[in-house]
Image (cartoon, rainbow over all chains, first blue to last red; front, side):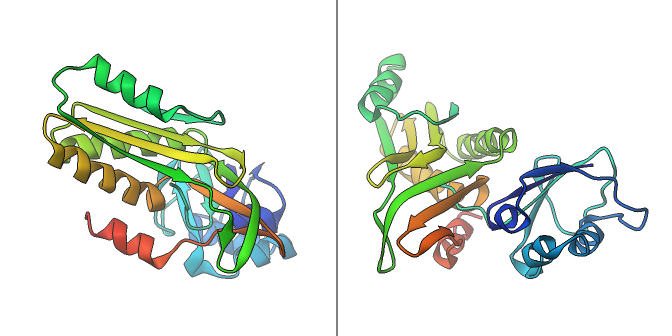
Length: 83
Length: 148
């Protein structure tokens, strides 16, 4: 699974992109985030405030309960500030 | 038309080209976003814009399509820069063109309002106190929701 980070999520984790093979209990974005929180202090800090997180699955904005699999590109980021 | 680029753009040249290509156009509206040199009471020395390549182009194209469905438009141009910019630098250009002014003026405001919250860009400011990601603003969400 390709996972990308942008904004302060990227800064706190320290990388912009990684390929992950999450365990079977990861079925949607919420469970992915819960699993990632245990992968280090940077992840815990990045995902501390769930209400401020935004998500895209396969480059489309998606809700946190979106079902995901190994073939998906998942992006987790802070609110967008275009314009 | 959508362009995402690091290079600056020439406002006059962009608008002239659109007007020259299509003589059914009776009016053009434009918005240009610039980098301010302050945030609150702090000075800003630079702003770095990052974006999500691939998704950015798709989202901007969706915005153009939505504007063309809502208004009778002859042309739409969105140019959005990324990378490291200085105060005074241009960030974004929106141009809309229509036979009569109402469609171009309204759709130009619609596009910049939705760009603020729907285009996958993130701004990192170099402040006196250090680097800070720009927060989304409640008033931008309110402005975007007006068009729902």
